[in-house]
Length: 512
Image 1 (spheres, one colour):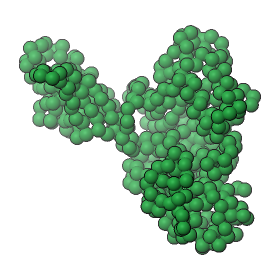
Image 2 (cartoon, rainbow, N blue to C red; image 1 turned 135 degrees about the vertical axis):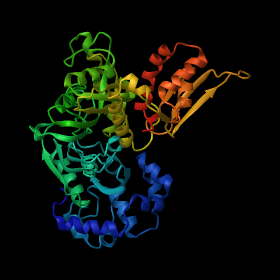
Image 3 (tube, rainbow, N blue to C red; image 1 turned 180 degrees about the horizontal axis):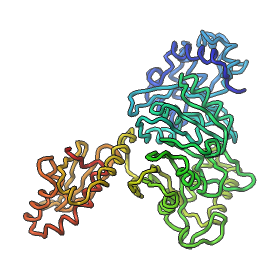
Image 4 (cartoon, helix red, strand yellow; image 1 turned 180 degrees about the vertical axis):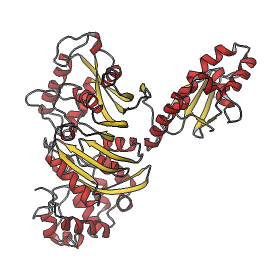
C-alpha cells in the first residue's frame, strides 16, 4: 500500500509523533543504550525486552514503526490518538490487522547549522519481513547516508541537487543550507517515500523529479550537488537481483564514472559536488568494462582510475579512499546486504559475483568520498585515509577548500612572510629507545577532521614547534637552518611544500 499524500493525514500523524515524544533520545531512555546499539546491529530482542509491560504511546509506536511488530486496535488507537486507527490504515502505516507496512523512525544529527531531527519513513527491512529485500526496496537512513550528510559543506547556496535521493535524507539535509532543492530518482516508489518524509517534517523547498541520473535536470545548473548513487558493483547476469537503491544498472564501476562525467554540465561556476562511490582495482594487465583486455590506462590502481575520471571531467577533485575490500569479501558483503542468507541461493550468487570479477580482472574494490569543484583554482588530491575520523566532517572539508584557495594565491615568498599557528587539536608524539636522549620516531596527530598522522623529521618538528604566530615562516626556517647548520635555501625548499600540506589539512592555521 502506498503512503498517503494527504496533508491532513500527515499533519495528524505529525501531531501523534510529537505528543508521544517519538525521538531518538526518548527511545534510548526507554530501552537503554545497549539495546539501541543492538538495534543498529540488526538485533531487536534487547529493545523488545526493554518494552516489556509498557503500553504507552511511545512504546506502541516504537514496537510497530521501529521494531516492525503488530499491535492490536486498542493499542493503535491509544498511540494514534489524532490520526486514528482508520487514519493509520488509510495513511499506509499499518494494515487492517495492525501489521506494520513501513518503517518509520526518528533520526537525529548535528551539522553546521546546529542540532536537528526528523522522522524518516522507508520500506520494512529484513529484520521485520524475515525475507530478502524486494528489488524496489526503499532504504532508510544507513551508514552511507550518515557519512554523506556528515560531509556536506553546509554553506548557504541558492540551489542544490540530490542525485538519487532514495528516502530523501540527503535532500532534507541540503534544504538546511539551500533555498531550493531538486531531488531525483529512477524509482517512483523512492520519490513517494521522499515526498512523504519532506511533508511529515514540514520541509517544502524540495522538488521531486523522476528519471535516471541527470536526465530530469537537463540544461540546469546547481550551486551544490550531492549524491549517494547506486554505486554497488553487481554482476549483470540473469538470476542476480538488481536492487534499485544500490545497483546502477551499469557494468562495474561505470555508474560512478558516469556521474563524475556529468557533473561539469550541471555545476554553477564555483559550485561543489560531493558524492560517495566504489571503484575497481584490476589486474595489472588491465581489462575493459566489456571484459576485453584494455590498455594500461584502464588498469591497476583504483584510486588512480578515479583520478583519470576527474581529469577527463575538466573539474577539480579531491578523492579520499576510506576502505579497500578484496573481491571475495565485497561479494559477501553485498549478497548478505540483500537479505540472502548462507545456503544454495547465497552460493549461486557468490559464484556469479566471482565469475564477473574474474572475467574483468577485478581484484578489489575501493570505497570513498569525492569532492569536486567547478573553479579556476586547480584542485587535485588523491588520498588514502583509513584511520578513525571525527564527526561532522563538513566544516573540516570547507576549511580545507578555503585553505587550498588561500594557498593558491600565495607564492613561496609570500607564504614565507605568513605567521602560522598550530591548530588546537594537534598534538606531537615522540618515541624513545630506553635510555636514549633523542627520539627515534616523531609525529603530529590531528584530533579532529580526518585524524591525520604526519611523520616529523628534526626540521619540520622544530618549525611546527615554533609556530605560535609570533615569527614568520621565513624567520623560523632561518633560525632552524642556523641551529642545524644547514643551507637555509635548501631547508626552505624542503619545508615549504610540507607546510602547505599541513595548512590544507588544518594542522597549521594562519594567524591573519
